[in-house]
Length: 409
Image (tube, rainbow, N blue to C red):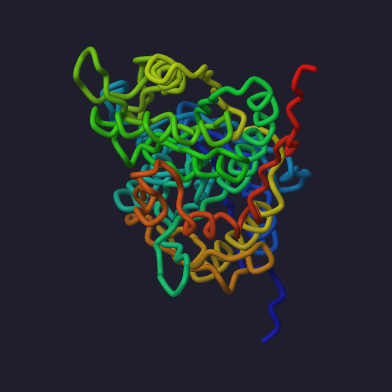
């Protein structure tokens, strides 16, 4: 029978993005929007995540306007708003969410976010029956996507989230740029990288020349710190310069308080209970200088991996996941999230390599032990193979000159 009209004509789909931004959110919005339009939806955008569904609402029409998915960040803006009661905000704002969904006649919601944003979406789906589809997003790459990585016949549960490929590219490039100044002064450079609970992004620094790395999954106890300083001295002696990548969430032993702890830039928390990290690189660099006598400097990558254009890999990744989201819309399967089934090179980022997971089983997924050598404080060949799918082969330039010493006449 001929289908004379689009399946979802007269229906409205709304898109929101919440939490920290990544270079791939606009690409995700653009790709979801395009497919929703093909199905006949009117498409709305909700400003500032869940905050845009509070009060009178802050909703815009995306149906007949161009949308730039190559530019990083999110044109829909973002916030860390939690609609459910928290210590910071005890008010239950779910009734406001439900009222605005009715007022704006929103039939389906696509939430682009990490564990916090999509966790709230999952609760709204379960408690209120909102037709929602989650879309993965995180710079830290620690959102459980059940993506399998095959390495030398071994099946490893990895993670692949939009935003991480672009962020990893930025960190590898930044590390590569730091090499020339670091070699010039024969320093140790401690590069701080985003990663509250996982070291996935920190590992990308090895693709630009970092040789040692510290990750949140391995606590730097008093005993482990002693081993760390020995490894640092050994590696520095080999080339007379060294870059160490450190996750912002590393648990570092404090010799004065005799406690393990993290370094915070601020004690204030957001509505999901997270404090703002910052400064562990300075602590590590200072102790390296004191314990080894080698000049060490700290460099915080900060928001650099969040910023800039969406990478080519991320563009294809968001497109493939949006194809799967369209499949979920056609089947009416809500409360789910599209994911990649396996780690693949860019040309294989297609819908046939995707799958879906229940939003209730998202959670966080730390760096797998097989990817990190905690005795040598470095990433393994298995991790290199994992990231090669995204970045290609590591590239670590150096002066490369071997000079002949001149003796006085």
